Image 1: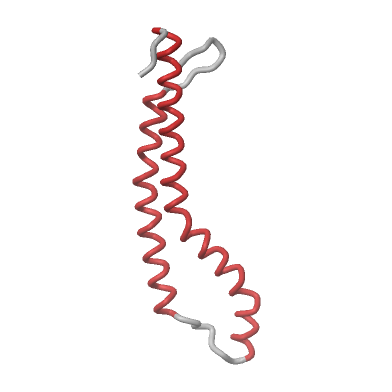
Image 2 (image 1 turned 60 degrees about the vertical axis):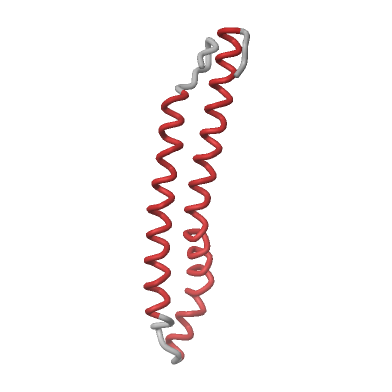
Length: 103
């Protein structure tokens, strides 16, 4: 779509949106591997005073990061879907402008 000062390469946006599904799958694989490794390792820093001190400074931020990584695959899929939706909106608007008709 090109309206003089603004243009959208719809096919390129759709291509990039589709690539996010693949990235989502990769992110899911990474999360699964990370999750399995962390579960296997357990609380490997130990239960002594040094280990407890480490856990105090580590666990909260580690768990927050874990939740962010866990959410990433779904977020990538969501962004890809939104990009595709907006690309189709731009394509439809371009068609209306060019022909005076819509899908």
